[in-house]
Length: 375
Image 1 (cartoon, one colour):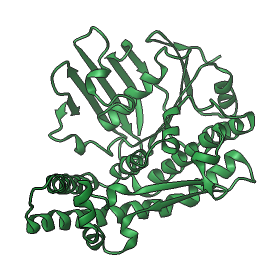
Image 2 (cartoon, rainbow, N blue to C red):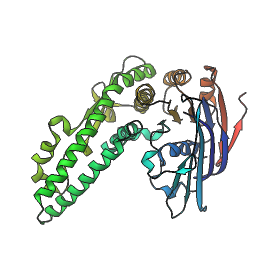
Image 3 (cartoon, one colour):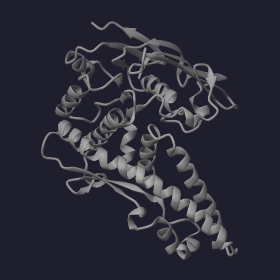
Image 4 (cartoon, rainbow, N blue to C red):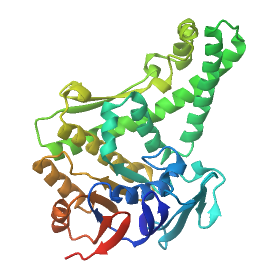
């Protein structure tokens, strides 16, 4: 997938911009806080119908402005006759957003997820290591939803059953009685949907691990051994039995202690938790390798088009050797269209000098975006 033109009005600190983009490498240079990440976030929004950084839609509308608009003109390069797609989103304060494909509004936003596959590497990725298990489950869900059209619906079924069961458990913990047949019904729905989700998560992890480890070795050099392990209550046996075996404990605490909502990914370096052992550079290398493996998987096995790759502040906290290896990787023709931000041109020039790929450079300052000469 190639984003040929990006139009932005009142998105975060960007008042108005229309960018004609390179089909290969697009570099955004500027000081911290001037809006470079906001450009990438606009691209992210057009893929996922939400911001990567702001959970509330109203927060993406520029201060003191009543609305924002985003529009992207894409071409699916591998489709017959290079199929063109126009994606637009408009939103006024206090109203719901309107997402359209070729000027026809979606009935459900989930219908759009996966049309424009995208992988982003950003400073926030360190939360995958430092944060709780919900961060790592969210990563799994965002990846799988891009190539499995039924995944979001199955996840919604599970979450609804979980919510209903938790409501009954909370009432029971406060002394109220509950209908055991209704409890059984919600547990069966949790188990059925949960086992389906577990299977898809496990299949994805089994395929991505060797690719992830290879990327880590390429970036870090020999001598560092990393691993990635998926853990789930489904590994204990039939999920319905696992959920029901400790129902009395669930009643005591007022919520469900077992299920795929407690799944996790274990990140290790040399057999020890990354959270405890990894340096800042090792942590960044780990999550960058994981995201590049995600890109490889989506491109190679799951999709009919090449994902977009967003690299936000990719070189921060990395030593020169690791920067050099990342430069070599992203400068190859393995990847499709790439968006890169950095605070200066030195690292970007290293990439551009190693590749014959087409590129454009943009300078960002205070929400204003200006294309610069490539010389």
